Length: 284
Image 1 (tube, one colour):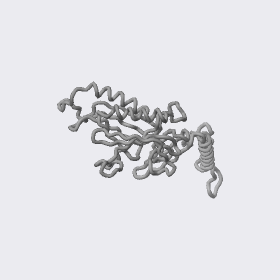
Image 2: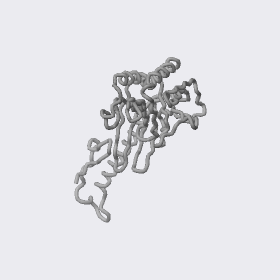
Image 3: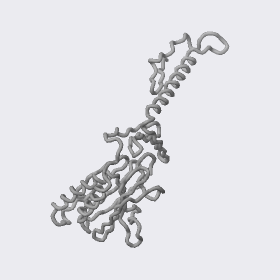
Image 4: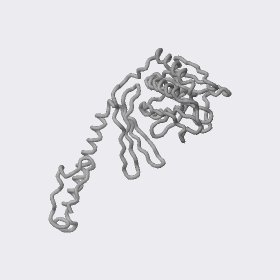
């Protein structure tokens, strides 16, 4: 899972603990809701189990039928389940002649740090169901579960029981984090994304090219120092560019006296130099 984000993935944290579990049999599907805890905090893993193997079901497209929810996201999902269930109850019998082209009857989206969750109540030839897809911003695995519409209330009640026992508070900063920024330089793209996990707030700086991607994570506590170091380098390079421009304009002509190209011109003052890009104006 990407650095700095909430790593809920199971099987990769040797100190992970399972705190509680619930099993739901909804029509022909069997779901497990597991409250887990690792060094990054508590979360709920929701997985559909393949009865033939006893493991998480893998769809024809290779996606694992599982999602991971922070406790606060699980509470938001529970509330959406109530809304979706009310909407489902208001629908009449399925009508094949009155189904949207994409099969979607109602949709919502949840956002938590670098994860997005898409909730779509859909209808196809087999009936109505709620598809919940989990994606990670700019890359990473995509996974989803499909919950029969008739089981939404049962699923909601199971979530409520777990949340009543373990709470919904993720801790940390409660305000709205700044939006991400994008910078393009030549054939490179830089993305600046602000996120939060149980360790605090961080900035992830990603460099993306057509066949290359790398990233660093900077904790909020050192942003000011990081900025000061970058500003110091900018200042030093600006002075170096200014000195280089002065030497170029006032240098002697080899083998003679005087200044190349005629009388010397005054060097650009510090106010003439863009202190961010260090651009020196062309005086010729």
